[in-house]
Image (cartoon, rainbow, N blue to C red):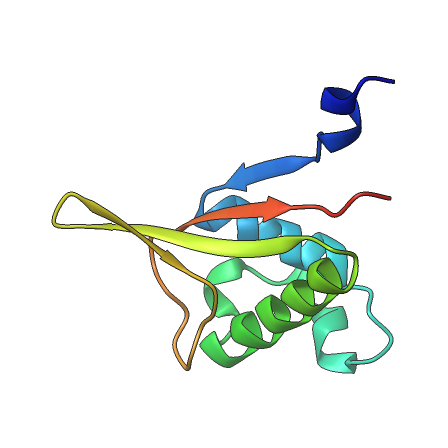
Length: 103
């Protein structure tokens, strides 16, 4: 294996809808939060902002624990801004980049 191959990491980019789908698929069967179990059968529009933020924080912790990162990007006045966190409301129209750690 070359040095270049050993430095490769898996990176995926997702739009808002795809990221929400990822969160539901990844954490919808979670035993730690019984309200999340209902997500797989619910429309994304019916999920509260608070629940999306909770799911985001869980995903961010999981990815970081394995040496990766989760960053949101938005375009404001033709300037690309990156965000490494969400406060209270779910951001609309962000793109998400998940960089998975090396396993």
